[in-house]
Image 1 (cartoon, rainbow, N blue to C red):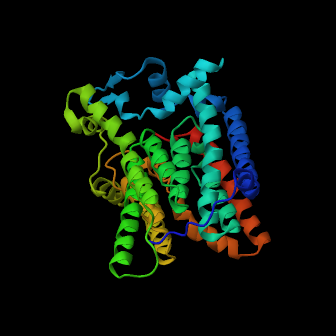
Image 2: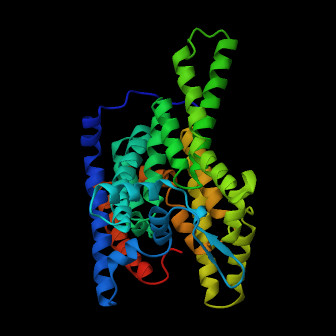
Image 3: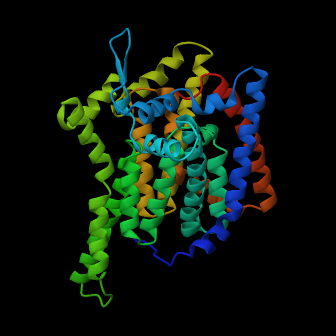
Length: 395
């Protein structure tokens, strides 16, 4: 799991042709989801576009783009919701779009998310194709598109942007493009706190490569270790990767006057933190105190068990080290956060390598059967996304 197959990547034009079926399928699924949302919203006399661009986190990102940092809301219970909790890359891009076009900040967020979701789909295909082949790559993209909360990929949220940066950073690691991997990890770290997962993947893979080279050199095997330039690029990637996350966290600490732990204080104001899953376990246990809430508890347990099973299956299938490290960190941060339990499916969206075992299974099945399964799930996902976003939606 620590050895990387750094076969040559196809040219950009060749890569796009290779990914075209996956991107076309992804666009079709997302179009279906948006159509369902539009029809459902019209029936409820709501604006589908407002649901996508001007609710929940999308409003916070727009405020950062428009007014900068410093905005906060003090709740009656004493909690302080500060916009410092939101990382800056998406609002920077919203501001850029508004500066060079007649679009508003909210429009810019939607446009960025739209383009980023396609870039994410392409990146997911590139990773899956590199590891398991083209058919698995197409299936992985379609599985990511038909997730029950896949509508978030079309919202003015940062999930699509982060997933695009993470997927292409992982692909760069898999193909030995270390500086590119480090630079993309830096940008991912400016997008969401879970950028730490990309940093961890870069660092773990680079460290494993150095250890492997040391063993090869020490055992006097005739295979030559990486040359000096490759080592330098690997070290540079390790230096670049954490700069985004660390830079923003330290800036927040300076801005709040609370030092390196200032960002944790900001998150505490949102009643969010990392407790190893204790609060989530209590939340699930409380569901079994009544009926039919117990059914939701069973569903949550099955959901968590499925996530764990998919990760263990990835380990057994010997997924490359960077994918396992990245997925492990994303999953741990999502499941072990102490608040916003309803948003955990959304927080797991970037953990696309969890879908690879299912993608491999679908790729081995007959095309007609795989298409039927994905088509049915796509319809169900579109309907659920429209219902969900018109109801409680993502907090």
